[in-house]
Length: 445
Image 1 (cartoon, one colour):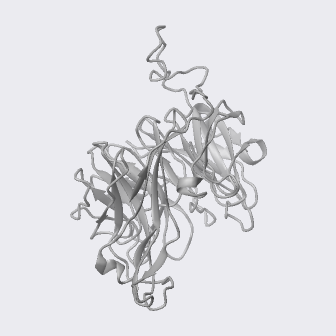
Image 2: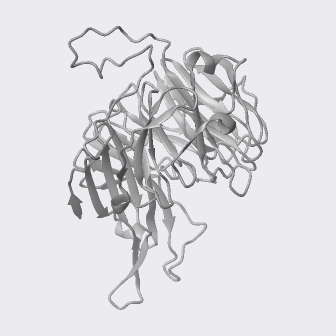
Image 3: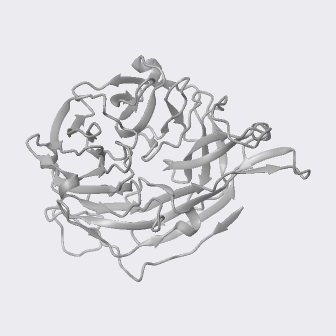
């Protein structure tokens, strides 16, 4: 196990939170002597993000553009937003992995792949296409590669966690012939989002049990870290693969192990431990968005993917940082479908969450309302579903009080922002999202 710590300041630049002219954050002003007016409840930006086609419609690999409107305009069905003609590009060789501050005034980005892969930067949100890059960047590629997966912790916009696993390598016994295991080297890295520095990182191999490893099972990817309620552990999702011990090659189809996560100490990022669910058998890494959340009851709820036999589950991790195998929420069972797949989801409040998903036989996307307390899932009505609606690259939801904002656009077709009241379940159609051939909107921030 290797662990290193260092501080990397970005040219002495002081991080500044950019705010709406009609609002300010009490946290930002807590050291000021002059009294500050309270934040008007209605004030915040809603930034929409669109992915540009590269080679095939919907691949989203041609870059990302963003455009910001007021919350009032986002809710107005008479407003049209055209991010592709009027928006601003963000640095990314492919689809950007964006995060936003709680108040919507700042966007965080780590460039994904390419010559600038692994560069962290921020943009202040000033409305329309007016996004001002901070001018400071932190390059984490030396530690987490040029394609790191990352999310922002729910800790008041203080910390981002980036994770990576190097390409897993087949290892044999001393005879050079007998298969032993397949492993990559994992990196877990913490970013101080306010001071522009890498605050810590840990690097290590993460073994499974000897019985699992001798069969070729291994961790292919880490993603979607979540800080537990106590603030002393990170729960990190895994994407599992299997090597054929006889040939040393990957198996495309294999009997899946129970869903797994890696637990590490926080903030030290040390002592990785693998926990396993006996309820779910899918991966827990998600794709380009959060995949687990601490709910109001203090427990972590986590989605699964890539289990074509049993579909997606919502799993429960208790406050002892272990899976609660008495908790069962199957999307297949609740929605009456087969092969459900949660592309992205977001917890709102009081046990209510929303998931975008597809199911066996089609990539068409749908939206489901999840009641984590009642262990139920229901299709959300009132949304214009379309056969070209694909949430495979979806990233961003906005939670504003009890309301959830979501962008719904079929590939190459216009769509809308929808606002869902998590208490009543009411769905409101908001601004029109103007599309272009092959493109689609991948989130609101």
